[in-house]
Image (cartoon, rainbow, N blue to C red; front, side, top):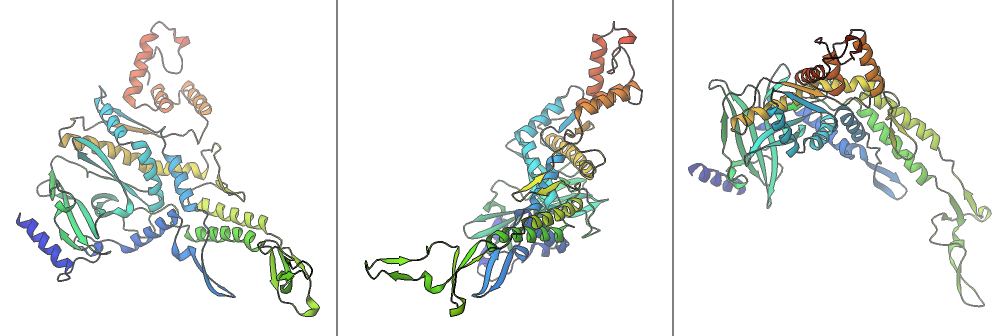
Length: 496
């Protein structure tokens, strides 16, 4: 009660201007961040949205003075992030959990389904490639496990070890009336008590600053200021990032956008695309006529008003000429369409290589950007980038599953096994032909270069326990099969 009164008094004094609040979140005594990283992130986010004022606000000098216009954009920041996200993860990605009776797999599968995981993860993976990171945080609401998807600009790491983030603060903004409220959710470890601690703070302000700390009851009436958890080995959040080295802050565990090192090229692409559009507007057909010809003339006989030219036709331009220069002049400007398209495509090829794609992935035909969808070889840059990003995504998804199981146990929702085999199988159908992959696998098994169990796991996306159960079932059905009739799945054989 006393705490609420103190918070209320502080809030009132702050609104009256008698006390000062925290002006910026980075000035919080427990937060130490590299502001340059978040400044860069705001640029990436603006480009992803398609409007970065420093690039797209143009002021040009004309005969009537300084004029403002907005530069056209080809939205390549969004295109590259979306394309990489769709290559790495889609609904065909399979997360397998082996735990004997498979109760854990069913429980986790139901949690993912209730949270519409595939759709939300696909969207936020796109934000991940655009902003350089994202976070998934499980929490419990009304007895059910919910998943919170957080973009990189709403999370600040506060402790890490070997590039693995162990502590951090989540930032949420709310508006109520004319006031802004900022919610800080701290995730830390109390090493002395061997507990995982989640603290909640709420700040109120009238402007852009963080403001003064007030009672949680204003926005979260049922929330406690602190929660402590026992028997946790990992943080209750998972940080994802693109598998690209951070060359902005070499000591930071945060990731960078896949187009972070292609900003000059992005700017050049938008400049060329804007010029391509203006080529048609500025190069339109014009007919120059003497000014007196566009004036109205009264027929002396009928008294009707006539005009030589249609005044609503924008093709005509009236000019005042000297007497010896009078006449109608047809002005035709040659459009540089092919040159613009060639220039844009040259920039798109450069941009593709800078963002992890193969040459020719993006192309411009004068109407829109096309993305190559043909089967790609294992030696292509796109394939290598996809596999590289999958390394981090796979580890992250495994951590998400472990966090779901851990928080379910803490809240007595489900008591599943802790040490389980979690396998993530990504969809490679866009990379290589399935029939060719199957034929290659059969050949490898026939030449005794690949165990039969591993072949089943590869082709059908099963974990080791599921593949062994499958082999056992095949063996039982084919006990009477002669050795000469054994197929590549290993029927009648105990070989792995």
